[in-house]
Structures are given as structure tokens and as C-alpha cells.
Image (tube, rainbow, N blue to C red; front, side):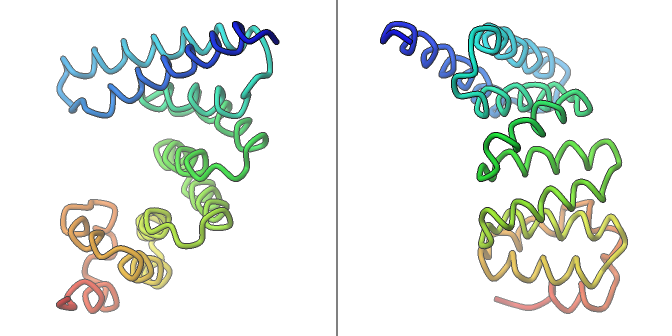
Length: 187
């Protein structure tokens, strides 16, 4: 690969990442959803060119493709490139988080939990992974595991305490004694 080709590919990859970064600042209104989908589609278009050309940075290209589809709420479609990315780049925590997100939204909590267990093998002290596992175990109606993961998330990052009150994923266990004991502790 010539220096020019490598530079062009890196620029295209940065362009796709830029579109997805822009999406992160958007809200949930209908107007913003249209903009979100348009930006994500631009990312997909750029990534399609990279995918056709080579296997260069394949894991990252697949991850970004999955992210763009996830952003567009095309969760089932997002799973394939994310799974492929996880095979190429199994140490990428973000791939496992995105997979968990997608599996949850297609009602496959078993696979969402499995993906986040893989994330823990990559980064055992990632508070977000523990927090999300707590959410998923709550939805699976397993308060003991949910509370255990939530407790660990709090130990790693106390800011997660602020999210619990509005997190609907904890509704199934919100009145469980262990959950109440954990969330009522004053820090």
C-alpha cells in the first residue's frame, strides 16, 4: 500500500468516526433522529468504500459499521459487523458494549450478558460494564447478581449512583431489599 493510499484510508476512517461523533450530541426529537440517521448513513457510505478495498484495519471498520447501524436503531443488522469485529479485535471493550446494547434491544438478554462478560475479561475494572450487567441482570429478574454488579460499579465509580434513580432497567428489582439497602447508603 502506498503512502497516499494509507493516508486516504486513514482520512476516510476519521471521516466516518467524525460523523458518528456528531451523532452523539443529538437528542431524541424527530428532527434530530432524521439528522442522526443521515449522519450515520454517511458514515456507512464511507465505510463501504473502505470495506470494498481491503482488509486494512478491518476490526475498526467493522466496529464503526456496527456503531452506525446501532445509532440508526437497526440493532439486528448491527450485530453481524460487531460480532465480526469482536473476532478480529477481541480486546476492544467498545465492541462488547455495543454488542450488549444491541442484544438487549432485540430481547436477547442472555447474549447481552454474555457479551458483557466478555467485556469484563478485557477490562475487569470498567465501571460501565458492571453497571450495564447490573441493568441486564435486573431485567432478567436476578436481583442478587444485579445488586452484586451494581455494588461493584459503585465501588469503581461513585457517579453511577446518580443514574440509578432514573434507570428504568432497575424497575423489576427496585423494591427488592438488597437493592434498597445498596441504593439507600449515604456516601
